[in-house]
Image (cartoon, rainbow, N blue to C red; front, top):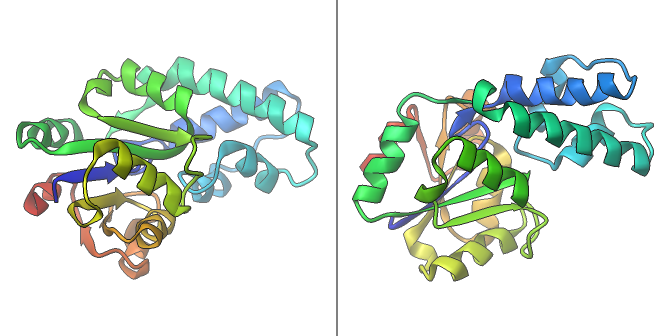
Length: 212
């Protein structure tokens, strides 16, 4: 594969605690009860944050969800550099892939402006040719439009592209767009992804080097 698209949360970084703390920060600030992090984890990387709030608190109005989302993003961005942790081998592997002249892209449900700021704060923004976030023209995962949009931007044939992710939504995104996929076994869905339809699975991020 010459071009690797990858999910952010659960694939590059262990963001479960960071996201759950951001969710509960927003809830408490707006005088709602905190939610058990174990209820938050299954939404990470699968749905936009506004939809996650509606799942966690079904009685919220549209205006309440918008306010919670705003407060969530504020805490998320301010605390990213302190609370986000790269999985082992991620930074080194990304740099090796660039050295092999591979093109890298990010595909996430995070809002585009948010993920760009987070990547910059982590000092890895220059490694990615395209960063695709929520609200961009091709739709959100698992809509095939998001992968096709990145493919057009990178000018790479679909048969040279692989989607790297950690949830069933990532596998479905790849399938819908007609590209191969690699599931990481350490992510949000863990070993459940062995039955999620990925083309390949790997135990460690560094194992991506075997596919280039």
